[in-house]
Length: 221
Image (spheres, rainbow, N blue to C red):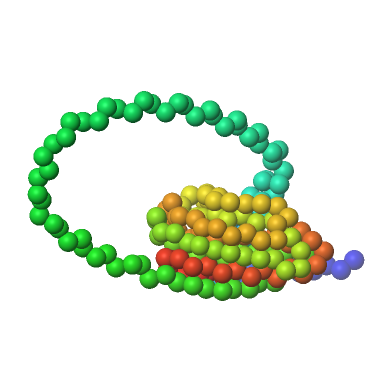
């Protein structure tokens, strides 16, 4: 048998060194949690480092993929019957004629038309891959759009997320499955990012071409 000599008291680390090592390890773990784990898993980025490294976008995409999975698993909702319109009321009797009074003519104030932006973007999805393109749109502003998918159909969701909204909250304007194109317009119901999420469920690469025109601030791709 080999007897290993026990370390002396002087060779053991002091209490101060042990506390210091523990504090350093704890600070390192907290730093990784805030800058790496929270942005990449939950899209929570209090420091902004996660978005600079692309981790926050990864977390946002994970949340959208989870929501899409729940939508695919949900049973179709029954369509409620269209209510029968009520009969139109009888017209009221015409009022007695009155002598018109001459009013001064007020010139209407010219309101400048909003400056509209137009963008054209393309993105290619491999089989099973998903992506999104968002516009920064303020409340009550309208955006017209048209997109086509070359190579196969895709699943899509046109939706919006408010600035500083609750985690996981979004409003869906329109969505569909196995679609090759879509066009229309939406009016933002809040200030935030509004746009499209696509997923390629086919076995081929699919290229999506998107054209947008409207009163929006910027494009996030």
